[in-house]
Image (tube, rainbow, N blue to C red):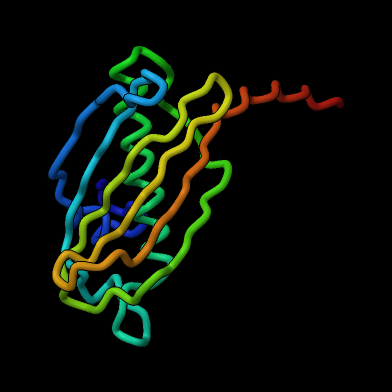
Length: 150
């Protein structure tokens, strides 16, 4: 994480534990799985001393994006996408000081949109706390600027 980057302390605390590409048995398509872990610390917390929902969504955004980038790079396809939708479900609170795993698996990788699912697990207390589905798309080409008329 570069100096000045949004949520640098959160992003910098994520430790990459697993990266893999596999073939899904059901349809024979390639997919990627990327797992990060961290310990919930002060700058991640809400007023209730639990993981802030916005922080959870931020981790889903960056970690699921990595899974999609890994698959794109591994298969020679595009990998630089922009978010289209990020749907999140909160199942249980994540208290300060617990170790969490952020498990990201690609779901689909089409020519227009791609998607991944993320699970945030409280490893300390053995429970699923947050799930997210991240849909991304190819960015639009910039429109040419019109020349100013004098």
